[in-house]
Image (cartoon, rainbow, N blue to C red; front, side):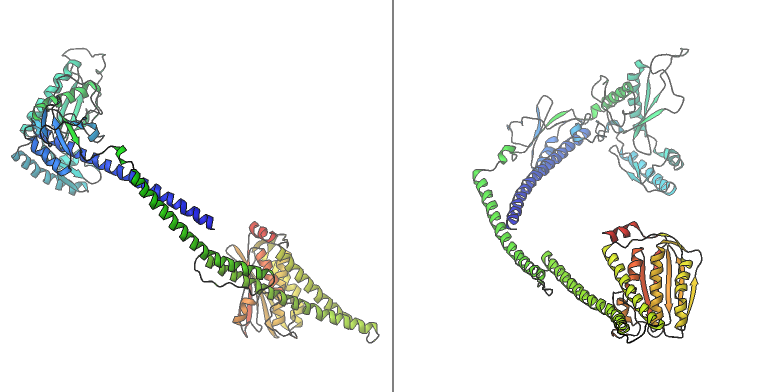
Length: 639
């Protein structure tokens, strides 16, 4: 016990140390995550500034504000590392590595979600609406949203976009184009300024695609506030024959459309990017069309955004990972704390062990006393824990064994009495006949035979109970008609009933067939009939009933006898129990018949019960499963 306690203590200390290391690692990881979040915020703020300003003039104030809020040094340079703004003192060297490239037309993928466009949404360029146009479209959008909410069934709300054009958000399924048209969606058609920007953008796209015989048109979707690129058939010269070149085949259906932000911009480069990055705009377009659309957007937005810049972020308080190693003093301090915790844990473990050992010793002493025959051995239970429950279980077991021993002694006494009476009668009459004191006339012979039968019944009952207790009482199940079974049992007791002045009747339901050992069930019903005959005075009535209830066959033996007191009912099926305690009882019987009834019924997988009213009679009920004894019941008896 002590060794186990020490082992638990050592493991606890080691686990605590491991948890401390894990906690430090998690703290470092959390700090790194917070650093990345701050870097993302700085980058996003500066990209937003670049998207709204054609030059970096005035960015110094924004840089200083960000530095004050985040506690970081922030520097911004051109791609040639010419300083644009710096939160540090003049002359401070730049950090060795750049944090990111600030370019609203090519957002750094490290700080952008996977499904967003590389062109920042805030770079609206010529698509920015004036105040008057924006207010007018917002008014129309609110009316359309109310109409869609009423007709579509879900809540539709108006939201703002960077260009000032309103867009819609909805719960559940997106409203279709027909619902949008029914709610006057054409009121959100492009304004004059937007149309001018659209014409310019489509001109750039067409100029790029013309050499390849392809067409694409960019339009604004009033429902989503975004745009679409519709691809169409390649332009064929008048009178020209269909071309066999790739891209000449045209689908007869509607043009293909891809979602696009009207506010997204284009590239500063005039060269077509043959492999543009996937975006919501270009993901479903062919490579040539996607490259031209991407280039045209960047070219159109280039004059409205600031040029690309390098971002430097530094944290003067940051220290290399190797600086986090423990010093010699820190190592000694941690070791001392660990040793102190270990000593305290061992002391506590020893104290707890001694508290556990004392009740275990008391329990051991009680077991040894019981082994030498002291049935009154008990232990004092002072603990509510596991040891206390063990002590309570031992006391319960001891009391149970004491009751069993008392029952065994009572059974031996009862058996000796039951055997002594008929044996004494046999011996007395036979010795009298041997000495010539009496003659063996037919009446005396009948009495001696009856005493012999009583002995045989007692011996058979004891044998059946012994076999049942040992799990060796075997059944031979077969299909049995319940009505036939009770009729046979009643027939064997009818003469005895008539001799006792009793009326024996049968009330059996036909067609109730069960799978059971016919001989053993007859024995159980016969024991119940014999018990009823002994306890029913004339003129009385005994009724045997049989019926089916669900998946059970129910057999009842009811009498109009003396009945059983309520306090005695729980003991009716106990061995050698009798309501009449006198040795000179008038009812006879071995006191084993009802115990055998219960054993035989349970062996079939059923149950035996009794109800009684003193002075009015008793009803014994056997409930047997129609399918016969389960295999588990037989196996339990065999163990």
